[in-house]
Amino acid sequence: MRSVKITWFEIPVEDMIRAIKFYEKVFECQLDFQDLGDFKMALFPVEEGSEGASGSLVYHQEFYTPSSNRGVLIYFFTEDCGQELKRVEEAGGKVMIPKRQISPEMGFMGVFLDSEGNRIGIRSKA
Image (cartoon, rainbow, N blue to C red; front, top):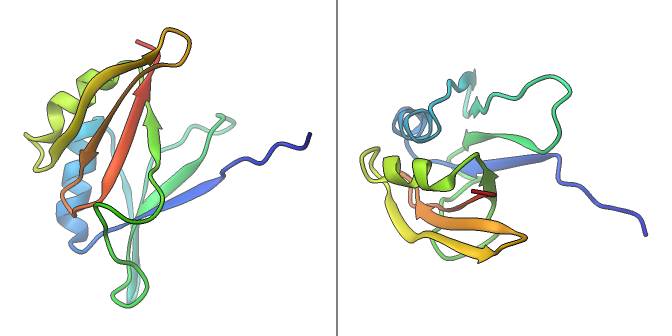
């Protein structure tokens, strides 16, 4: 069977500066801001040759709308999702599902609302 892999994701935002501050605080990383006129992006860091999808925060007034209950739910993978979930509210978001075990094989997960009102998942083995 042929595998289908996700290679890119875009998280819609209404306030790019606020969203960048939120994600940089939660994930303790630096996003790369790109101003393309009416289209703005902030790319998540990715190591050359690493596996998994990369993506960005994205703003375009007519094309993207943040949502807390519609559309796709993406999950970020981290070492221990409980650590990022602890920083969510401090960064201006809200934890919807605290860290909980999916199964011993699959690890743990949680879901939060970001500063823009998007529902975002987070997963880890620990």
